[in-house]
Image 1: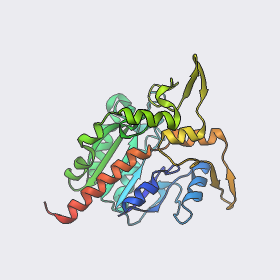
Image 2: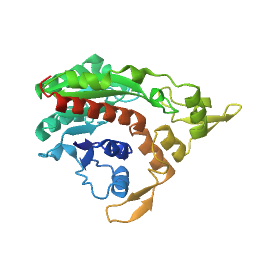
Image 3: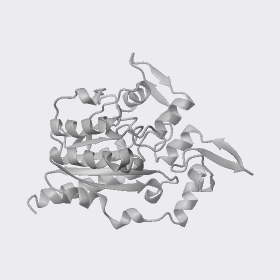
Image 4: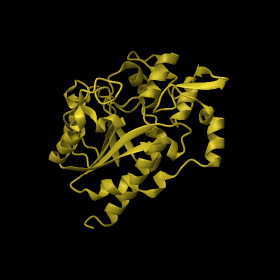
Length: 284
């Protein structure tokens, strides 16, 4: 299967998906620093920039996390009427133009209540108009082996049938709590299971190290909380082809906007499992 990503960020889950047999056909990222990191890690994958301008293609799966500012309780809450929230509808329209069978979309849980609860049902209705049957679920990275808490809503959709998307997202294994061995591993990774964070929803804020004294997490610790390889955000290739090292604030921003790799990997595994079942019994 081949896939494309929009609002791609630094796509640190890409190597995990490639190991599962998915091949990335394109990225679409307009921000300069994440685009530079993409050039560094994926030199042969084109970046189309503004995804609303993509008119044609041939992919099996479209993935993306459109901007959350109009959905987050900390943002404007403008819903789909906001300039960034409207990109959610553009995501559905792009999938239709590209003829993708599968969709994976990620956002903050606040999307469920944005615009007094009207925004998300409208998105689902637009997907249905485009022929996609969707399932959605709020997943927390801490239950997938991550040492940090990160709740995000994930939507999976399939063209023409509701059953494949439901089979991907609903599985008892995803409810597994972190056990003693995970706690020990998490302590070694980033000490996050002993931390007090500044964020109510994510363990990407600060670390309590001594009697209430809090320091910021390092970029590498933040990457580890996301399940990313060490220093994934350290280097980029600018538009002139020159390598440069990103600053700490730049790297912190990139981790804050990315996907948890363990969650993305679980979803990719489930999609490939269902895809194999569909191949064996396409009319079942």
